Image (cartoon, rainbow, N blue to C red; front, side):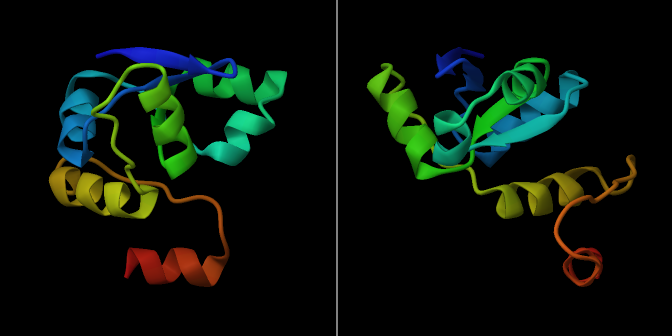
Length: 111
């Protein structure tokens, strides 16, 4: 699995959701979405958080930057779609904890 630094943020070059799911089956990691806003404002705390975990291209800006770095097959992996696939793949063997957004949105997601 290749990774590139985008303004100091290590971003892995997954080719799609299935690629991410295969990766997390064998790697105990936290997935962190990387998008243009994070690339542009990457302060030291954000760099530390993403570089200690697994950043993936969640936005078109990150995909374009990866392609410019030479990874022509980079794909945008929308977080909401990815998380539904992860839950579908692992709900029988893993538990999940949802953070962020509002209580209403989290409850709707769980439902």
